[in-house]
Length: 110
Length: 116
Image (cartoon, rainbow over all chains, first blue to last red; front, side, top):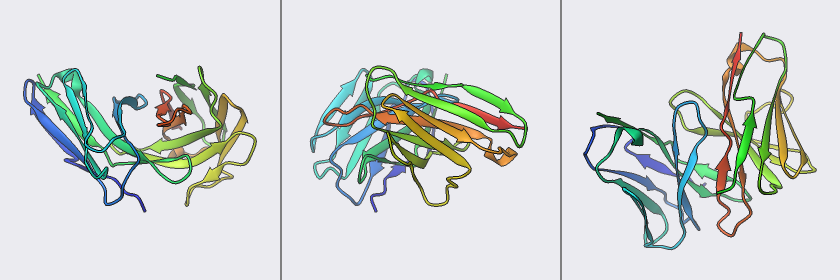
């Protein structure tokens, strides 16, 4: 069973601080995706990482895929209140489906 | 990125009635769509995989007679909550893969169902 774990589950920080969210598995994934979901809305795709060791940047967000393709991290620099939301990592499972991590709920206080 | 649209965004119904939620892929064809349920402050729970032209595949514990899924075309899947009860109140979300090599998953906006 391909399971994804995320840590921390909850994070509350002040505006301007940096943070890192982790996504881990005991299984190898061909790719991992990161989503952000705001209350009452569907998740929005942030990035897909495919190659082991890959680093992708999206403004203040830096995503990294582990060399063994079993883990990924999301680092946010100088967090802003607009970064508040539920961050989900997901990876393709057998067939067409994806498996999701439990999510990290981030709250950035002004 | 690809666009997936859900309708309605929110619906309130009386107990015992049925409610239909639509999920459309607007700029790509989706042979497979997915339906999720999300409880407050929790992650997504996959309910079923909707397959165009064939029966949906339901996850363990999901009542297929309760949650009817129809995938009549390559751009439309519907979820019907039959004989809804207050415990069916939830946030329902659909998604579809866009068919690229990485097969990225795109989500609809979600539909909040409240059963009185």
